[in-house]
Image (tube, rainbow, N blue to C red):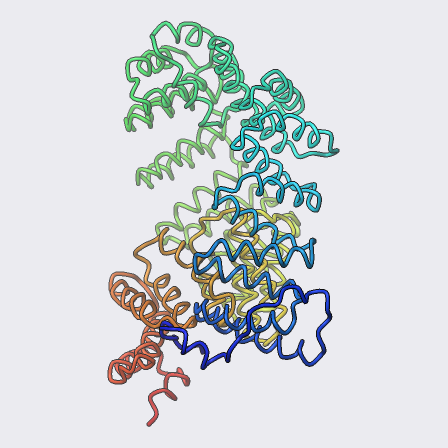
Length: 633
């Protein structure tokens, strides 16, 4: 466990600690050091890494300079010197050592990236351009580097270089569409508008639902003064992308006078008008929004979606009674549409009218007795009301009508799992998978049952199967990561820990603001005492997203404790203890927080306070042998 290191004062302490390092003799880099000198250099390098972990960057620099004197052929040592000089705010020396490292190993892309950042921050854009051009030779498929270089060209007043740079990129085979969109955006900004428009049109021929291409093309038309054509473009985009919120937003910004809406009102359907009306309302253009909504009300829907758009309008106004009337008319006009009953029931659920929602699902089943989703939604409402036996009866009724409904088998299994009927629950999940091998929920809940039984490796197997079916399902990825971490504790196998890290990293790629994943991964690192800077970064973000979560404060405090920063550790554990009163945590979770608070207090020399925290932890978790040992005389 790393202890906090006091700030370094003066040079004498450094000399006493590290010995006297002679000035670097950089001219010797062509001479290979002896094995003995390499070993000594490595010892200094290891000392430097310890200092870095304690955030004592001056100490690290002294150690690394001694290492560089002994082995001036190591690009790693010079790279680490550059890193530490950057940490203490000395960009000149950081640049010097980064260049030295690159002269020894031009393939060190990490050093070149650091050098580019340092040069940019120092205002040396021409030098940064040269280094970035060199980096592109090593990473010619990295689109972000082209984009970065284009920005530098523009900042340096060399706009004429941007077009040829992107033309070189566009000639690459299998260039991702999102990259093509970004290229078009950049070309538009540097005056290559004809070429940019051509790229947008080519993309939309292949992918008419590409929102970014539509928005880029409309913006391009606006910059050319083609306002009417831009409006037409947004309207086409709105039809191609009925779920987009961005398209109505940008179109609403262009609606200035009431006559701007005349053609739109006459030609667009209710769904389009509804979405645009909402966007106009959010933009404060209430008169124009009213025109659209009045038009919608005056329409007689002829499709299911038309009825639902009209109902959505009244729900948006929070006039739920009127929405109810509209949906009643809709069900009369189209009694065989399950979408109407499902939308209607869900809308009633959202305002807490659960018994009415159940009546709607029953009404729908009178017309559609084999519609499994209606049984599913009905059962879920009963589960929400803790009427589990009635929910099971609904699922059984649905399966009598349609035995091939895997979702109903899964929900029935979930109810059995809550009743701790583990074998029966697994039997139902197995039945669901027999009907549909792609049933992710069945595998997820099967894994959760195995978790409850602490069969971690078997649970991991089920979660892994679920992820193989849908690698974007963040809920499954979370449980996979958690299961792997528990399996690593149970078996002691590092392989499981590494896979757990990979699962959480994959999850955070899909959802970078999943605060629970941020906390779990950060705490994993902190508890293991590794990647502590990354742990703090992850946990600070989790706390920012949920600033009242005591578990997050505990994790962050524990990470700082592992770093040896006891003041910050104590601060965040105090916050955790303050918040724990207002949150629902089981006894074991609370015990962990009190245990951590005790460890930190003990390290600060507050032995009585530490003992009080440990006694509280033991009261909450009487079988915790680790805490018992801490309380032993």
